Image (cartoon, rainbow, N blue to C red; front, side):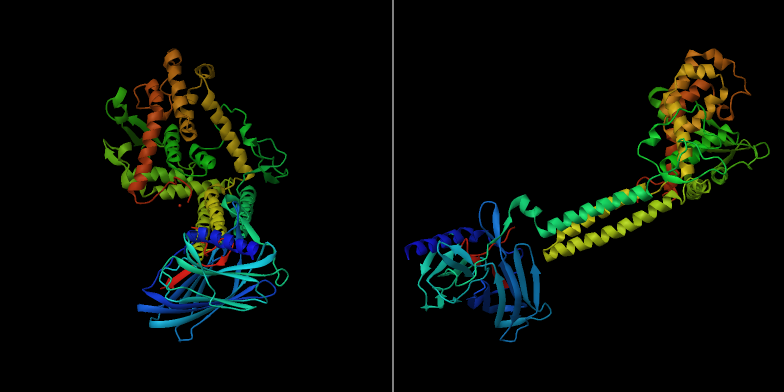
Length: 627
């Protein structure tokens, strides 16, 4: 028995080392103790174990039942753990206690909760648990070995009496071990025959102490399958079925999202046409997906796009009707004579320039240009300004820093009309805000469902990574919702034309303005510079024109100066103040929207490892308690 005994002893000592690692995920231990725990282990010829546990629990006061956790992973070597399967779990109570079973199958532990949360029991109650274990036999020297920790070291309550009985077709050698994860001692079997052995614990087992049996069987008497191993650490997570499934869900979801964005969120263009042009009447108007990068090759345009207006182009470019678009429209309406813009009070310079204030004066209805050529949003903007204006010296005026709530109340209507305008012009098939809102709603609902699913799976202890992967895909969809509005071929052509004029405004130099000798260039570009976000560069260029070529400016007559400039002391000061005016106007418009109680402008897209057992190489163990 020398080699066999040494092998068994090594197995016992190794198992004890890891007993300290075992522990329940959560154990709401009830007040009480285990009066007796009797475990029966039967080794079948196919290598499986039939385990029966009879646990008599003594409740100090009351309780719902007992908990039992059985490890499914056991240390094997530096890089692997050994995995067993526990199936066919059945529970009952000879004393009539409630035996409802709540079973949680985790990756490394099986958690059983027995009892009824709506009923309380008292005194001593007996519970019987039976289950089948696969993968529990191992090769050891020239024998087949089964090492089973009948009472694991993770019980949180004392066990006053414990015994384990092992049955097998034939038993060559046996070892009974009692102790803690740090210290063990051999005990003599209480009963032993050719196919049966019983080990009784010597005295009570305090929490942290256990009882194990190791039996050696003749080679070939039982099947010994190859151990099921799983890598530990990061690689172990990678090969888990749940992890692989989660990666599959994540990759498939992201691939599907990319396809969705490409098919539904990419702009269209007219097939066979030069970018920026529409097919002539009667020609083929088939549309295809706009290739990546094609919109970057935009030719420079020296004049604003024919028939387009700054406010609607601003909505076309960023798919949002925002404060800059309203500011640009105010400047454009002034350029066409519907209102004038002037500084209110003395001019300030240096650090006090931030306090500059501007005043908008509405044109006399009798002398104002006809409104017949105005877009619906322009009419609504003029009406909103008139609604917020006050009478000063017989004229309707409104100070920029006092637009107020009355103006803000009408901004959502203007915003809605801007969105409707880009649809009426054929630039979008649906208003961009509705498209973003719908996809954001779908993504938000999906995120909530995926989040709840992840939490449920996490509580259950299995497959939560799959829920997390689905949640990440839903969050990516939430991010992609703002990219779902797609321009039509007509919208892409108009956008490229607008980008051509933007390139000019963003790269123009003062000497280019000099030779064009057109007063309109000095004013028509102002609304476009605002909507393109190039006011700093353009105002600097025009200021340089005023400094370097004052003669050209002096030659401008009053009739030559557009309406937007009237009432200002000099042209140079206007262009130097352009950037500040655009910022102040946009802030004032946005602030009035907030005062109205309505968000009129969008600012973003629509926010312990459990191993039980007394012996390494041995199985079983775990622990339990009352609840």
